[in-house]
Image (cartoon, rainbow, N blue to C red; front, top):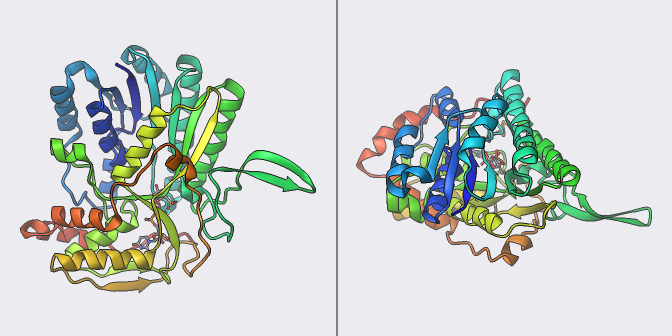
Length: 393
Ligand code: USQ
């Protein structure tokens, strides 16, 4: 049996990933400070799909998968490096297959809520990752860090193709290979991811650590086989900060408010269903790069404009007798919302065997079946958190 540390095991991806790991026979050491639950409350919002409490989830894991196969500590990885070190020293027992860092504040709008929110995001994401790197240097130099970075580290609308993290740079007739492709983050949140990209790359070069830093697109949906099997859904947020666009539009359709298209709605992003995001994380865990390597790839399935997403949600909703509407509002962000060139390379995952399992329509339909029906009215308070109030400027 192998151990895996999941930092942020109670979050949107973390919960679904933990279930997959336990089901796959890994012993999981989970860490989470419940920041996501608190931050969504701060938005006066709640998960549209009801989730179990942290305590309930963890005792369920122990009951199903064995008392010693799941261990949990509630701690902030940025604030308490000493406690983290002390806990992990006792918790890790077997070969450590990987350290998966999802303990991040993941919302771009949340990082613009105030100066304090920008600072907290920066502190949590950058210092948290640094603490993990230092812990690995001392205690797990031969293990593998898997970090969720973001496609938003790049300038989506710069007009060039987007390679997988690095490229060959020719300047004044000379060639430099495997150079980190220029970053131009779209928010303070995304800037924190850029900083971690460089810190992780440094830790690999200076200390010989091994890492996979994943440039992930927008994740959506709620289905995984383990969530279904164990009746333990992951969260599904729809407020302006923690609801990503596909999930927001799906909830908006179900609660009967127009879908909030920002600007012209032609802005493209990469998207991936949660089950496929987890498939990719498992591939990262299974196919470890050579020791001392900083590996990066782009993790997405499709590239869609926001307008296309509204159409896919609308078509899916129609099948369930739900009529949708759209509302165009000026984008609260600083982003290009008119059409632009968007070509992202995603060969590395395909070479490792990645095959998408869920189309966006299937996933949206699945979520609609979970939300629509007689209890949909319980979601009506979410109508109050639909409109964006936080602006970049
Ligand atoms: N958008 C709308 N209407 C809405 C919400 C969003 O038109 O009601 C638009 C945004 O303006 C943006 C696009 O949809 O152009 C995507 O926005 P999003 O909120 O779904 O995603 P984003 O802020 O980009 O961040 C999300 C995750 C983040 C991850 C990132 C990947 O929250 O953790 O890093 O997706 S990426 O977008 O590729 O940078």
